[in-house]
Length: 142
Image (cartoon, rainbow, N blue to C red):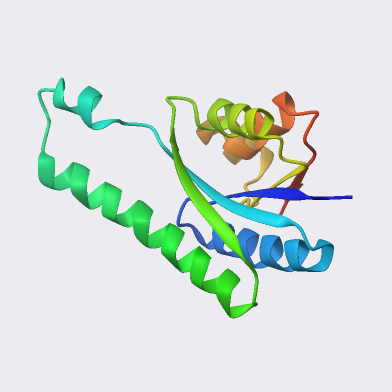
């Protein structure tokens, strides 16, 4: 049985499909749902960069807030209580799996763009990295 579902989002169309699936899965299982996004740059680390620009950093933070807000609205439309969090980490897959384990999630839901094997070889894939490292909790790729 699933009691706690973590839905990873990044603003992509694939992530929107994951939100839809995560909301439906949480509703079906009467599970808690939390949306998570990963910020790979902190304000402190960005400030050390010669390319530091407060406006760009703030725009990125605003985009993250918008993504989480839209996911929360979707959950509310489905009469589902949900929560959201932004976590920090340089490696997105490690951050998501670590957070899921630390917080006791039963399941991870995330979207994939469906790249070919060659495309994944060239660009890498957070989904592939999570599937390689996470035996628990199980992962559903939408």
